[in-house]
Image (cartoon, rainbow, N blue to C red; front, side):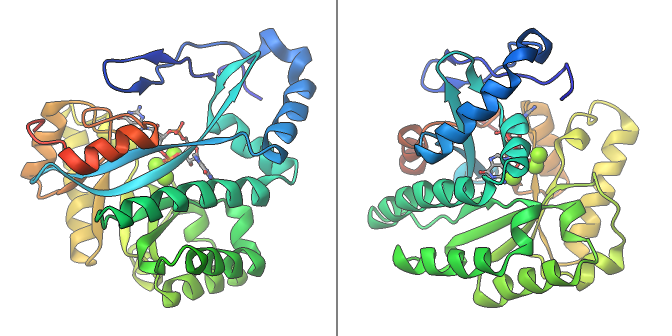
Length: 289
Ligand code: C2E
Ligand code: MG
Ligand code: MG
Ligand code: MG
């Protein structure tokens, strides 16, 4: 694992929990790496992982358009550990399907509660490459959604671009199956893989999430032109566009000028505990753009 692996530190903000990167080098706990794997195993089996929620905002209205569930792990001795570390670890240890199931159940429990209080926004779940190989995963997801008396259309399945555009027949069959069952499919981190327009056109995709690395480059002219091209292409393909990593008002305004309605990022909110997300559902995030 790279030395630059980040552990996120927790600090209380005004009305939410912030995960700015206090960087701890993994090297300093190198000998404890095995211990961390053991503790992840323990945390997953003990159902100790948590879910935070980040709103995807309609910047025109300030209302929450959908909500992304993001896994969080707090270890007593290390602190908050980023999913960029523990998701790949869980995949390696064969824990990903158990982990994913727990995140799904926790998040759908919240979604059920929000529905019962009249909030109709869909929930986005991140799905690992490994899981899309498994017919069991597809069956379980459909079953779990039914058990919560929710509809597949209440759930957005987020998969990363490299996965979505793979030519693995089995994976794309499962993706089509999910889509035909009514789930919405989003391509996550778009722009980081290798896709062609024709591939995108053939995929069962509803939403394109533009990777935050493009948003970070809006401060120069070529970055702005690339963003404009991506947005135009997505709209031409009839896809909904979400731009990730919107951290500033300037970025939000520029994107609005391009016709982007759906945005996600620290400018609107970091991932927050369910209770804070519910406040957003009630109050919206007006006045921020
Ligand atoms: P992702 O799905 O692309 O999620 C977006 C990531 O960007 C999140 O990091 C979020 O906290 C961060 N982010 C949001 N707004 C901003 C912003 O304005 N600026 C910056 N710099 N970052 C922003 P997080 O929560 O650390 O998650 C990292 C990745 O871990 C996710 O990327 C996703 O691929 C994976 N992940 C998280 N939860 C799960 C899960 O339950 N299952 C699976 N399979 N993967 C997960
Ligand atoms: Mg995602
Ligand atoms: Mg992303
Ligand atoms: Mg990502």
